[in-house]
Image (tube, rainbow, N blue to C red; front, top):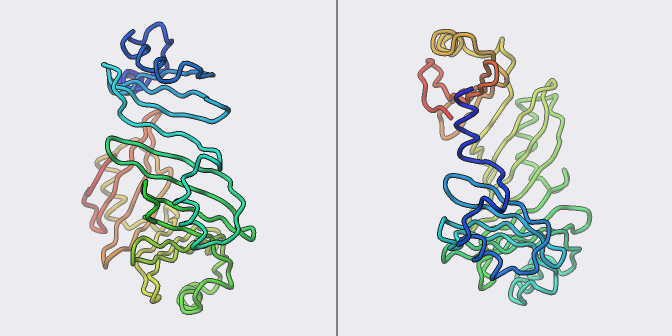
Length: 263
């Protein structure tokens, strides 16, 4: 109960009448026509969600009413021309699903999501229209053959769920997700077919004995809600989600059972 109370103290919905006048005044001065206004107090700052011209806004203010960050949905007509030109450099025709402007301090970037040929595409750009990140859904036929062959050679029962290609500067990553014997597997490859990372869902019987022993010793009374094996950069980590009553904790273990990280 103490843990629940502590969380509630840092993030809680509040009525506008309980928000400091200086914060409310700062908000209303900029957004006098806002609708569906909801306030939340989180870590000493004020988050206000509202609608303006039928578009969602998410605004964070400090206790003096200064804007910390602002996320707002955009109509297609509100997207700067430079952003549209960047999108069309990758995709000439598109059907817009979502466009968002994010501002935090001096950092301003845009997110644009749409479908092209029934495939999901996502763009992240700076305020000048420079492409920061681009992600697109891949059909099975578009996944490099070397990657599919690599997976199928190791897991002949692999059942593909989805795949994505991400470009971030000169870095290209291919993500492939699917199931092997009803267990989730996720793979990350570079554009040359080199495996970068592999996550796989584990049954309790597949968790190494040293990790199980550490859980029994350090987290007595907790049940295992989820277990994953993560291989990256030649290292193996076991990521465990544990639950005891209403309390949940995520713990990362080394193969020898050493605690590496908790959250």
